[in-house]
Amino acid sequence: MQGFDPKFKDFPDYIIGITKEIWEDRGIATLHEYYAKDIVVRMPSGVSTGNQGVIGATMATLAEFPDRKLLGEDVIWSGTPETGMLSSHRILSTATHLGDGGFGAATGKPLVYRIIADCHARNNAIDDEWLVRDQGAIVRQMGWEAKAYAADLIAREGGPAAATQPLCPKTDIQGPYKGRGNDNEWGVKYAAILERIMAADLSVIPAEYDRAVQCEYPGGITAYGPDAADRFWMALRAALPNAIFQIDHQIGREDAMMQPRAALRWSLSGTHDGWGMFGPPTGAKIYLLGICHAEFGPRGLRREYALFDETSVWKQILLHTG
Image (cartoon, rainbow, N blue to C red; front, top):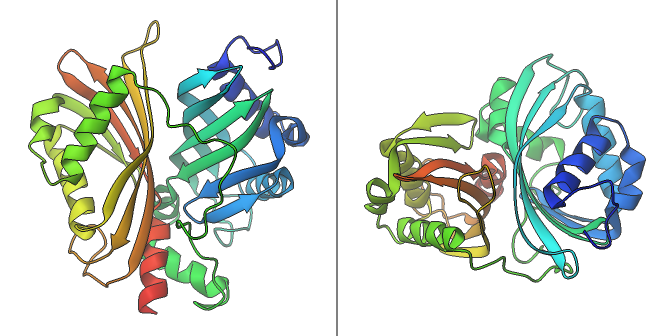
């Protein structure tokens, strides 16, 4: 771990360790050390720069969810300490909505939801990040539907003309990381599966998914079997049938005591011109940032974790339709 604090035994230990130190141990000030001063952070809701903004957002989140825990389920990574490393960190977060904040007045609701954060790190600091949080799961546990929450958010931001624009290629900022991951066979395999799905060849699902596959999907959905995977991917692609699918980052890994895994960061960019996951077609221009993790077993794809922010898609639709 050249350039990193020797207290971290390896890169996953660094990623999981600093996450706990920052959030649960209240070491928010360590963000001056662990996050580069000019870091670029992309979320479906928008883009921010600088660690000072990250510090402010972290404090606001903890004021709203003071008991929040971030349980690191996996870190799928590529690169070297000398050239920089990219981690795809899957987190199961628990929290209670005890304070007023970005999600409105405190509801006292207990929450469980996932996050996947792709972070590039060099010399003990993260300098580039892509973060997707399951906003759909959060708002549903508070009693909202994703569309209604997006409409309320637009109103609270001052209406369509003043509302913050969600992430899209025009608002994105080029950060220091320009890598594409690695060429490990499991990343290649999962990329081929998603490419076939997005090309409308959903026969790949019963062919490549284990009959007992566990599916973790946006909105806090847990389902089982290839039919569940077919329903999810069909509903998404049907809503955006002509959108351009692009894999932006691909990692495969084989590690001791773990199944072969893959992490893909991808996007759909196009028009909401089909019936599917987001209701009647509206013609809205949509940019959807997704991150997926997959675990493989002897009978195929054994677990799939797919994540994107439904509320940001609905916000784009509502900003278009008024």
